[in-house]
Image (cartoon, rainbow, N blue to C red; front, side):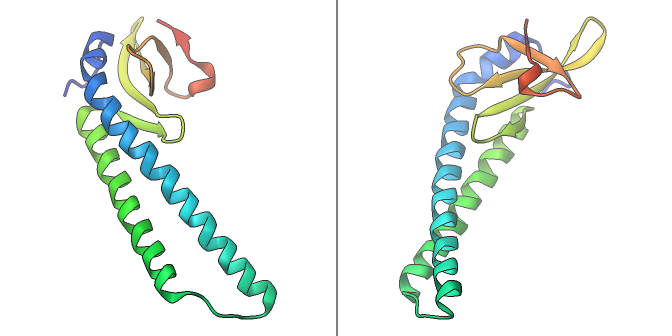
Length: 132
């Protein structure tokens, strides 16, 4: 992977990047739902001063959570191997290092975009991105 990307470099990665990010986003959302369900169960037991749980369901949920976490980790590694830095899984944001007007900046791609069309400074984020 190049140290600095041109927009065309990122554009060539988008089909694969989109597939990987979609997997990561779906797994992340599913993991968040399981985490919320497990936390609600913990709260229920805590508020009741104790109680019983369905151990089989709890084990299934925790194993599924582990599997989803591993899937997200592998997807983020794959994005990193492409040269991207994932900034927000929920939004599907990935940055790629670029040189613009003699300074390093990030090309900013968001899941669903067909081409990279924005950039922002290294110390800025999605809210400060500007058109190329």
